[in-house]
Length: 345
Image (tube, rainbow, N blue to C red; front, side, top):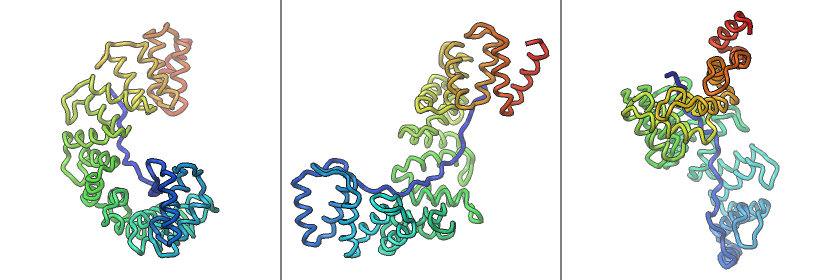
């Protein structure tokens, strides 16, 4: 059975998030922070800034300008966390006009004092050319500073750079940094380690080990890992072949809208693997995948119409679906379209 496999290692482009309180701060706590902030205590000024930035405080509405005011008071005392947060506000345009130059300036102030989140964000700005000329060398320099302080996303990004880097590709080094991020529970690192084991990049090829890492990522809800784990159970690669288990993981990925998982579920119903054979159900899943541009799904719908499987036989509809896949370059669809045309449909 032919199925889709995902083997793309996801690039992490998101900037380090602004921290916020999980629970709203009480009025009593806010009053205490105001008293301490008025005495010049930087931690209280930062806490007030967080409250206003997140809007998570009793009788407090989200107010970025007010957050900026409190962060600036703390930053005036050279507090690196406050400097980092001001950089975030400028980068995202929260309460101020978006300004990458000022964002970078504030990040550097914090980064030079050892703030790993600021170091990470500078790395990502250079990595992706955000407000600066793209420089992989500069990006790596800043990622290393953050990674050596234990920042998981910086460690993961270093893994990406060593895997895909220009002039510095080193799979073993890539795996090393992915492992460091994985030790901190960074889900994307689990997934990328799984891919490295499956391909044998930087480590001996080991499907059992690959399946283990896919499982760790899949259990955290990572959709690509759920899908790939399903493929491994379908093929019996690194695990005992188990179509029911395969279907379970495909369904998890499909519930999140992954077209390739929806297509593979259609295949499972068509073949009766892990589920009773059911062409009606197969058609349902093929249609979902076809609507998202999966050409093989469009072709398979054509086959179901041509053969009257799960639907009333309809050669004209079959030809239409073959044509849809053909238009986008799927050769079997073109061949089937010409065949039906020659037959007079």
